Image 1 (cartoon, rainbow, N blue to C red):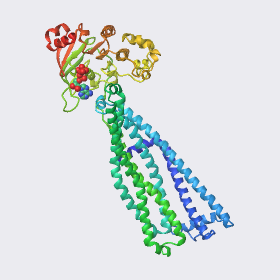
Image 2: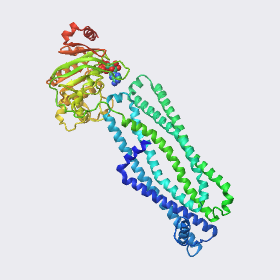
Image 3: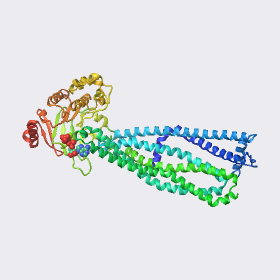
Image 4: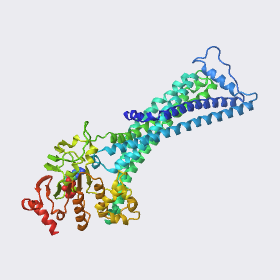
Amino acid sequence: MTFLIRYIHYLRPHWLRVLGTVLASLLFVAFSGVSYWLAADFIQSLLREQMIVPPMPEGAIGLHNFIDALKHLSASFLAADTPSNTLKRAILFIVAAFLFKNLALYLQTILAASVEQRVAKQMRDELYERLLKQDLAFFHARKSGDLVSAAVNDVNQLNAGLADSFSKLIRDPITAILFLILLLAISWQMTLAALLIAPLTSGVVTLAGMSLKRKSKRTQEKLAVVTSRLNDALYGMRIVQAYGAQPYERERFTSATNDHFRQAIGKERLRRVISPLNEVVGIVVVAGILFVVGGRALGGQWISTDDFIRFMLMLMGMLNPIVSLSNVQSNLKVAEGAAERVFDLMDEEHHIRQLPGAVAASGFKQELRLEHVGLTYSEGREAALVDVSVSIKPGERVVLVGRSGSGKSTLLNMLPRFYDPSTGTISLDGRKLTDYELASLRNLFGFVTQEIILFNDSVKANICYNDVTIPDEKIHRAAQLAQAEPFILDLPEGYDTNLGDLGDRLSGGQRQRISIARALLKDPPILLLDEPTSALDSDVAEEILESLDVIGKGRTVLLATHRLSSIAGAERILVFDHGRLVADGSHAELMKTSKLYAELCEKEFTV
Ligand code: ATP
Ligand code: MG
């Protein structure tokens, strides 16, 4: 139950509200006791048609006679001059006691709910923050639906389960103990007999609880599948429709919802049976006891006839919290399943981290050097890069070419440390990349990624992304360089047009140009361009590559491309084949020395 300790940690900032729930619980217990007690007096006076005030016990009040003292107090409190006035008085006080009891209950539940929502918010924020710190490899290994489901559903389930249990854990034991004391004082023999229900009920609950935790974890997993199927289909709706795959997708989705439904219904069946089962078991045991000891009890050996009514009422008062406590265990099991998923995600290690004593990277002045660099994405897979050694000087324009899957993107991704090499080292100006502060290192690079990533925000915000202080002129300049300004000005609200509102209405090339503008705006010493012109027609592509000459001045540019025609003038080309660097030179040199390069060029030009 370590997850409980962790949950209590989250409660600490809200201690005042927690204290409030405890106090409200105590009030509830007190009024609850009073209401049952007065009800007993009331029923007795009804049966006798008058209120008899028993004498106050003589001498000191102790464990043996405090029940008699209580009886004296409550009866003299209720008794009035005439029986009908007594009745009115009793009714009034009983109603008041029930009213206050429920007010206290309301106060307690509302405070608990406010703590629950606060903790849920805090957990979500924390989970999100941890996710932001995670390595890219972490996201590649998971379905985004799973992560969404954990942050939304699991956090909910965990908090709802725990907050509810937490309130009950405070309220119910105190209530049960209060009534237990009263019961013991009325008749310890009857109480002991009745207490036999406790182990029986807890046995039933423990058995069910074990299976419930498993079931509930599986239900959440199935829900995550539903979320991720939904995500997938919505994201790829164009393909779904183009292939007329609606029946296929519907089939897949209903099969996921079916799986979830089956798990959920099984879980709910089990969960909902626990409380009624408990009550039935409890009542059967109580009835059994009364059946056996009934005669003796009524004969006055264990209990007086007077006290019998009071005892039965108090017993009911004690059974309620015990039954409700039995729900706590099943709630906790459900919460534990959710907690495992949430906390596991929070605890997931990230490997790309900043070492202590890291220095700030201030620029690129001498050399970017790869020595025997290799990368294997995951155990057992073929290496994506093998033994790559290369040195790049500031201001160079280096073009990376090679067949699809030869490792170009992999290499570019390693420079801002999205992945660290499995073997070999990468160094910048004589220091390993790992010696630099991560943020300052990444700040050296402008990156146009192979998949274009735009956010649901204005064009302007997409270009300047997280730095809103950038003056408009710089944004416009970057957009001009990326050949994006003409179409941006044509949008309904120009730079303020929301891309989310536009939905899919930008063309691939337009999207690409916005992402190029974003990379240019950062004014970085090193530009990493992964197929930046794949979606552009040759004219625009050429223009952009030419403008790279302008903005590439005094900058280092690494460009991965299949568009060999546009790089004929390049002075330095690296040719990759199956993760290996197989040639390095100018276009003219490579045409003579590299068979692979000549082949690639020939194919490109004949297409
Ligand atoms: P393309 O020209 O198609 O963009 P590329 O040269 O950029 O290809 P990479 O993306 O670097 O090739 O991929 C090199 C190898 O690494 C491929 O075999 C690919 O399947 C694998 N790979 C790429 N990214 C990942 C990843 N995130 N996890 C696991 N394997 C990956
Ligand atoms: Mg690539």
